[in-house]
Length: 115
Image 1 (cartoon, rainbow, N blue to C red):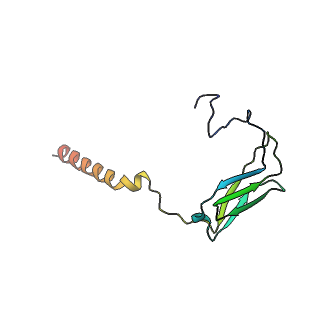
Image 2: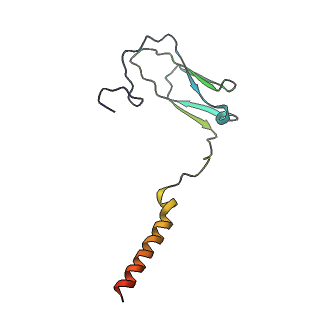
Image 3: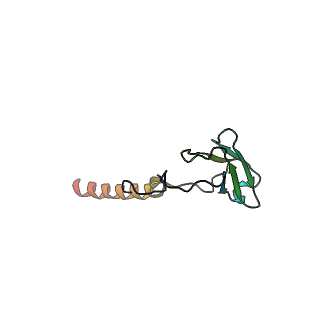
């Protein structure tokens, strides 16, 4: 992105309307959280959180609502989620094919140069 351009990764810190609520709502699908404990780390002292599974929403209430305050939290589940699938890598997918092609090329070159 261009310098000074607004971005999801570097949102503007000024020009926001005054906060009217101390509560933040985060969507957390019940398929993920069902039967698990929702753990929220990084909350300021006095801040509270509550997960409502029927609304699939994690509610967080902070005490400090000043505009220059940046809140950073980490939400996890206990027990943690099991991986749904294994992530492939380039050599795992194409390593055998690439090796076979290189061996075939080496065999052809050896045939012509060793005659």
